[in-house]
Image (cartoon, one colour):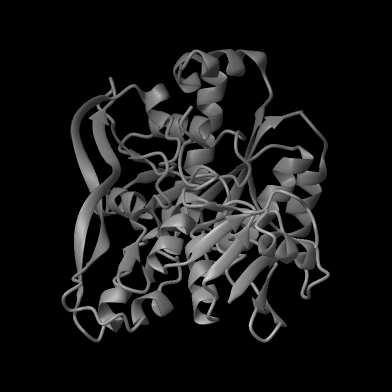
Length: 123
Length: 280
């Protein structure tokens, strides 16, 4: 199943600019063509939201994630849960972003796109 | 007696008041519990004769015993342990070393390993006064174990000044919870008063008696005095806003060593705290 980071529930919501602290995930079952929206319980975590969000998605049967960015801990978790991530860069709706994914317009990523939010930034 | 010096807002003069109180006391010891940014040693200039590393544990999962049941991940409130498909991920810098994951693991698959999160340094000033300060490694999530160690090594001292961290969060609570008395160093500015209100609330929750030292008196407005009157918070003293004080401070000098009026002021504040009657 496919998940997209979303600001609100439903296919017509705008996608969220964050992964670990996204408001919602819209989970889309391609076989049944059925969307289901879940609230991201990890979004208020002080640290480690990304890893816990990946676990939440795994519990909901997600194996493909469409996300705008991923930190290093979230990427470690993605690999450990054997999920695949495709990155979107435009602020479209969830529906449009899924269309882009189906049309092969999103690129697959396997390294984190943002630095750790923990500790000092390397300059 | 353990006297905590705290403020809520940063930069109101906690360290200035704490180090000068130590300086005017006969038998005091100071601990700098602002382990994220300790600075009392810059004024006390101790000769460090002892340093120790403070350790914290983090879990190691034995994959031959683990059956990926997920109990550790369900228990952890800090997202430090994450049971995945074929392995358990540990984010050690997020671990608070509570021991919970080991307790809930039905397979006995969790052991702990130690790592350093910071240091405690001990030294003596040129007048033979003892001070200890903690130093947290940048990026570590919590300095509480270092603060607890600072308390432990001074638990038998008669008079301890606790230079506390700013704010009213975990590290401040760890710094002040064993105090017999709290001196709030506040400045008469809107931010100073706003943060001080949170400190008063915190101290009331912890049942720690308190008094206020108004630092940089003459700045800002008089809201602080109205607040203290309404809330019956005792004012121990006022330290005027003076350029000479700022100059001494900026040069790393203990003001009480070079300014007689300041010294008398701080001696008076300390005498009130040490000799205070119940209910003051």
